Image (tube, rainbow, N blue to C red; front, side):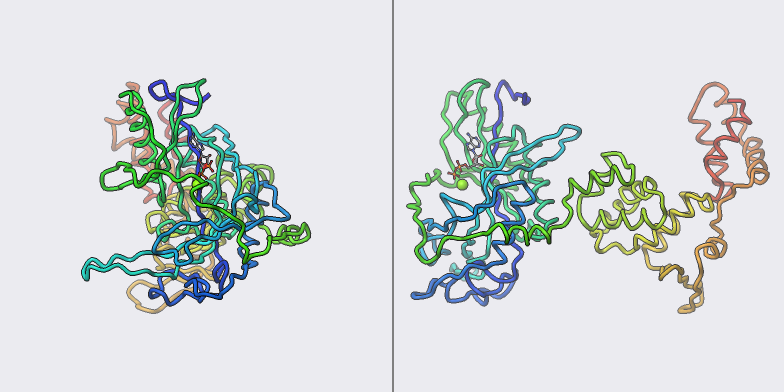
Amino acid sequence: MSKLIQGYEVVIGFETHTQLATSSKIFSRASTAFGAEPNTQAAPVDLALPGTLPVMNKGAVECAIKLGLALGSTIAEKSIFARKNYFYPDLPKGYQISQFEIPVVQGGSVEFFLGEQPKTVHLVRAHLEEDAGKSLHEDFIGQSGIDLNRAGTPLLEIVTEPDMHSSDEAVAYAKELHKIVTWIGICDGNMQEGSFRCDANVSVHKPNTPLGTRREIKNLNSFKFMQQAIDFEIRWQIEQIEDGKKIQQATVLFDPDTGETRAMRTKEDAADYRYFPDPDLPPLHVAPSWVNQVKATMPELPRVMAARFVSEYGLPEYDANQLTQSQAMAAYFEDAAKACGQSKLASNWVMGEISRRLNQDEKTFEQCPVSAVCLGELLNRVHASSINVQAARTLLDRLWSGELKYDNGRFILELEGHGSITKSLLMGDLIVELGLGQINDSGALEKIIEEVLAANPDNVAQFKAGKDKAFNALVGQAMKASKGKANPQQVNDMLRSKLGA
Ligand code: ADP
Ligand code: MG
């Protein structure tokens, strides 16, 4: 049962245009690279010159097959290309080549978690089509021009059933789909450049009544805008209905500046496009043997990998899901876990310290300045209690900034005040050199603790009066007195026993 808003149930279906990561266009040999000078990447076919004929790009079909395999869809052995007819300046042919009645990918589903809740969104289809060009409005000369570099870029439009019932579900679906298409390598996922654009169809209705009329929010290219746009649209539609007005089927745009959606045009029906099979392209045949060939090249999928992380490394499901956000992150975790033999410790550091630093630097795991093997070496020492967490963080800081380098089992340290003079050390020697070794010796710790207790009678009295915070203050003092090198667990235990707690 989905949650109601002011007595209304929300219904959402998605159409997502994923730009396929092929190097050439879907029906011509022109390049698909982003950002070139206008009209430098448009072949005669893309310019719609008379007498030119489209030729199907095999790589684009393989992308569709990969998606179908990843989502458990049926891959049609025979599908048809159709002409979708409409006029627009950026569409010189006067029609877009798409698939209509028989798409290459049919059915399937996307499964994900929303918090703890498992959720399945069913797909209707995914079809191959070409992108249109772009109108460029040059305000300073008061003219508009057409750039056909994007014309003919291969797209896979992925259409869901109206299975989602809140903006949270919709965003979680879009994030999961984004993860899958980038994971299997069919799309670069760059939302700013328009490689992954979502149209959200939104309607509201009272439970146990027919579905409401939908409005389609076009071209959502960030997850944040997606959430804002859908939330605004839901409130707007409910308000209209409560005011006694009818919702008109329409295509709307979201304006990030006002946070509002605004009708762009009334929605066309399929009949308006006069679809018919494209006589220039024969039916697309995908033999089962081709599907099998592609299957052999598929990477382990995120959900399968997450299940393996649970069984192979004994990780909690939460960790397994977090670590499989991207292939690079998952590989980083596996390498670190193998290097130190401590899966949970590696998981904590990859999800925590490493992710946090990467986020701060706006870097991905591919760009991580500290290798997984190097992290594994640090964690080895943490696990063996030869350094504590604080010392490991200090080392990580130095490695991150490049002040300290790691190369094949050795650490390269720049000597202070000696410019370019460096020292190459094994981990054990490095810890000694930097004075980071953990103090595990109970005699030494006892001495520190005695001194801290003697110097902080107020905290001791407060603790005895029942204030737990005072205990943390004493631990802090002892850590400080040891220059951060004391074994924190031992300090805790010894303090408790000394205080008779
Ligand atoms: P069209 O091809 O004209 O855009 P479709 O029937 O293919 O129309 O649906 C497009 C999208 O709209 C699909 O994702 C579908 O799930 C969704 N959808 C259909 N009806 C509704 C509705 N009443 N409310 C919300 N979404 C809907
Ligand atoms: Mg549509």
